[in-house]
Length: 203
Image (cartoon, rainbow, N blue to C red; front, side, top):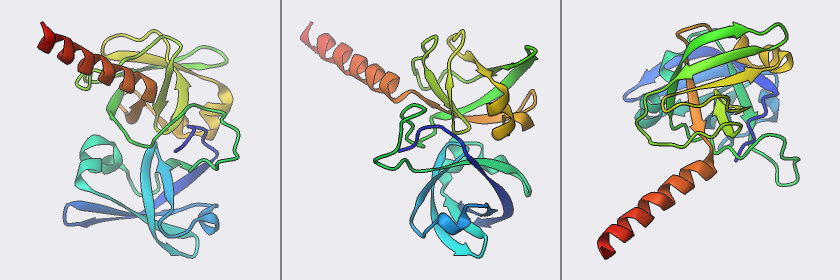
């Protein structure tokens, strides 16, 4: 479980295709804090550390992860938002994030608002998730508040601290990002679907 509060980056140092899997080596200033089998969120993707060598570590993405996320687009030298799993006694500063990416979205516009930035993203409305104005969403691992949601589009306002301390500063129009919808919204939609099915069977 994660909170969507980004405090560190990892730099992609090597990319290796291994059958249908993708092995990635990354360098981070917190590599010394990691251990084998540890879960770490990378741009919101929960990945397991499988090897460590000095200041670098390795993670593996399977086919399902590659298809559902932007990990296949990562380049050598790219900075990735990372977050360690939340400790049981840690303050919950963001929102509940699982590290399970629902799908990707594409940056449609970036508006400089003289003190903040408004990013707008478009996504294929294929998962029937619920977006609520002022609700929560996770974009590239960052816990954010939804602004003006539509059926297949939403915006987020980025303050200077978040802009400088995440890879939002590297996004441009056309950039693909990982999105994880709010877990409570997903459970609600699942409940509604089950309820509708049950009522249909009764009628």
